[in-house]
Length: 325
Image (cartoon, rainbow, N blue to C red; front, side):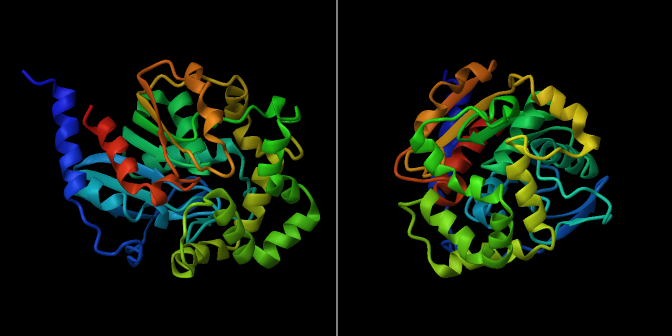
């Protein structure tokens, strides 16, 4: 008798192998839907059957849902209900009130994800994310594991240890995160506001040095950075993670829990690009200690930071491995 997990994996692999994207990263954006949460009107894209197994795909900085254009079709074809939101500060997602703090802290990302699931009446989902989106997925997986069927986190355990953030790291890693120090200054805020298109494109190039994307691919995403709250949310994110600014008081209780570096016990797969220019693949080698349930780490050769856009087949395969487990 063939093992059920092996059988599911073989079927999944066959489905992905037979999928041939017609658009080759040139697809037009899907129609945008909107849902209101406590503080946001979240714009999102949805595909697949409404009754399918929910999968939520979360982008990071500076990206948007276009990172998942070649991941979504095979997931939908496999019967998943696929939700791809625009994070706060991106695309057509908007704050409901001008009085709400334009926070980019990790607790905000996690709370937004949980609120989105509540608004869409999704009791449990497989969460997939990279960069900020990976952090949101880790936060929900750690603090609300009853809402998570499985976690795909690119670059590993990404819940920030803010108390330890002022301890210097290796000179090589300090070099990789120069942009964060830039954003700590008012010159950096002004630079992001004035040069967001070119600055974010430079980050793409540095973080994914082996990915030869063209202007058309980048520009489809860069339009999301014209959100009126983009600069405020980004600057707050990079200042808060080093303890240089306070967070949203409404999120203090979540940040206190995150400061304990909670373990993640939901089934988890870590994907890490061997060519990641901001988080070296070696950084996730010792992170298994943060995962107490089923855990697997997969290093993907050559690719950089934008795992789903650079390695869509591997991302879809890992996702369906958890959906079908």
